[in-house]
Amino acid sequence: MADINRDDDLIEVAFPPRFNYGERVIARSVIRNDGTYNGKDIGEVLVNRGEIGYVTSIDTFLQQFYIYAVDFVESGHRVGMRAKELCTLDNLPDDVLQGLGERAEALRRIGTRVQPDTSQVKEPSP
Image (cartoon, rainbow, N blue to C red; front, side, top):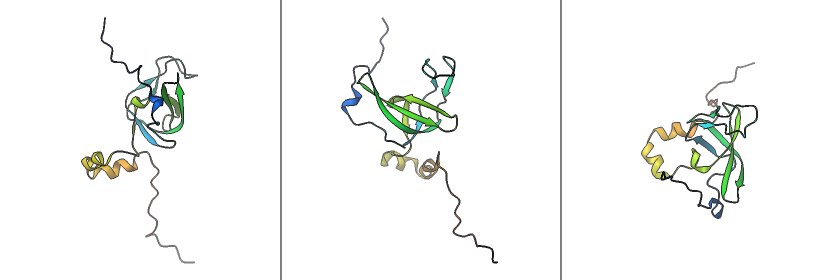
């Protein structure tokens, strides 16, 4: 019998959700349609690893797991995912940000609409 590492005995809902509404997250792995996504074939890729999305709702499954509805803007898919399939981009620990150094600022801008700085632009005179 194969030794399967499963966390099915873990009761996630005994703790607060790991992510919040509107939080920017990134997919840790490829997500394929398991038959619950209408309009796509079973096995078809819905989300690619590294794709960025936003948590739009939080629900539970079997009174055991949190399911996060994540809107992946680039692909246009809204997919239910478990916490282990996601990583936050908004609430990284300080030690991780320190380790990233200058790259931490680039990470803060990923998946956000950065408005150009118009403070230096002069208005045309009439």
